[in-house]
Image 1 (cartoon, rainbow over the protein chains, first blue to last red):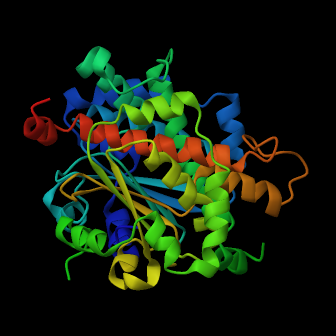
Image 2 (image 1 turned 90 degrees about the vertical axis):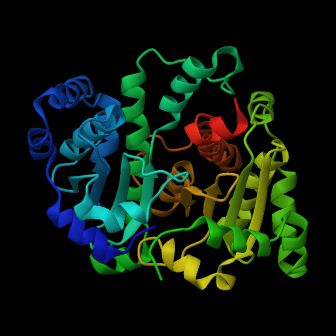
Length: 191
Length: 191
């Protein structure tokens, strides 16, 4: 989906783990990543969903250390990845020149937006690309920016940070089912 | 051929794509299940109200197969949503008519359909979603994998069409808010 397996594989190999990515950034950007991670522990129901995962998958997040939405989605993905043990491998890459091919080919609404996340099969074939912000974040932004004119009718949730975790988990689960039910992977795994 | 979706390419494909009636008339023998499914979909009043609040023109292209069961279930849902939002223009095109585009949006090493492309008014690409939504996958998994106890989040009854409406409406709303809050489009529309 919107990129080749070869390019995604190469970028994934150059990618950094959550910890490495935070540490590679400027010190004043690190706090927001740690803070988000601290608030996004999986609850019991979320942990139960992650435990149903069966297929190895790769997740590559194109991101910026300075970007608040990147810290939020990145921390959520890290929690999900940790909950899934070795099944879900997560890497981060910066929006920098070395990944120009990936960045230029994936503009959203005529802009180089982040975060952008690719969800891949174990052999790096892409299954989905998600970005830039989740629905709940856009609803919050619309309420603030447009007030009564915001085209939003959903009730505001108590904890907007944890709502993003739920949204990212929805997408990871969707791709897990896509992979679990994939004929080519069922044949390969004999299940 | 550069990687990635381009506005010019999408505009050309969109111009050659078909609206609901024209698409179904292209293969009358296979059209009946599409019409039957459409007749079973009734949006809730809140869903209709939300869609009536959309203001940004939003072309949406469903890459489809008129023979395809997943398209028969999801195409009419997209059409029901588009019917309630005057600013949405939804068109359909057969997978085999756009082989280059299908390479770009391959999923898990396959040319799966449906793939739904969401665009800005000037055809700048915004989002690509396919082949099935999360709740659709949960329905399929609970039916095909035969767990000894229900999957977390599994549907209690046969609510597939209602679930498809809520899943697809979430993505329609997300993309619409992305466009409504876009700096370049707010400048263009002075809103």
